[in-house]
Amino acid sequence: MIVTKEIVYNSKGNTDIIDITSDVQAVISDGKFSEGQALVFVPGATASVTTIEIEGGLLEDFRELFERIAPDDMMYAHHDDNGHSHVRASLLGPSETIPFKNKKLLLGTWQSIIVVDFDTRPRNRRVIIQLVGE
Image 1 (tube, rainbow, N blue to C red):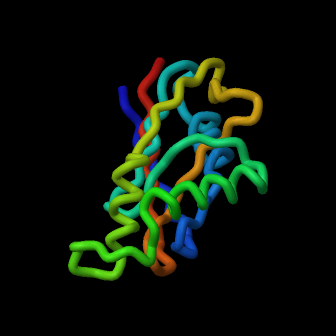
Image 2 (image 1 turned 90 degrees about the vertical axis):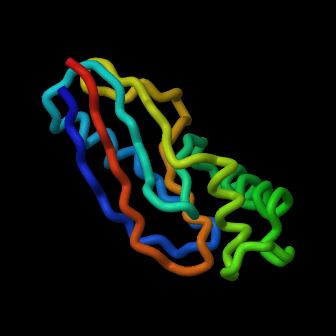
Image 3 (image 1 turned 90 degrees about the horizontal axis):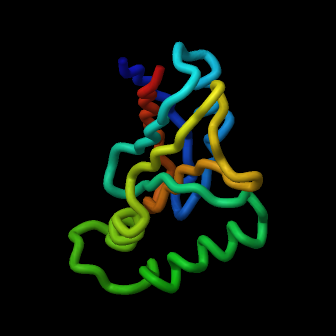
């Protein structure tokens, strides 16, 4: 059996990082499964999902990494002003799969699930959480 939920987040754009760990955990806690996998997916070409430690210095380092890899002030062949947003999102990817057991995410002590919005403007970001389990 598969259960799919959708949550919408308001982002600020420009490498905005949104911690969604508690929302993913709530979907699992409210669900039918005690053990399985949670797929977390963001539709679109300028946002990504990953895990990271939520710590101020590390989050700044993370943002700076993408500025070094795909600077926003560089010329891109993409027809809009957000070529860097597409490049950054494609590097990180749109999804993560996290196991859970006893209705609890099996994350590391400091590990959190985040959505990163790389686009150049605020957006409403849909996040799909799909559970497979028993």
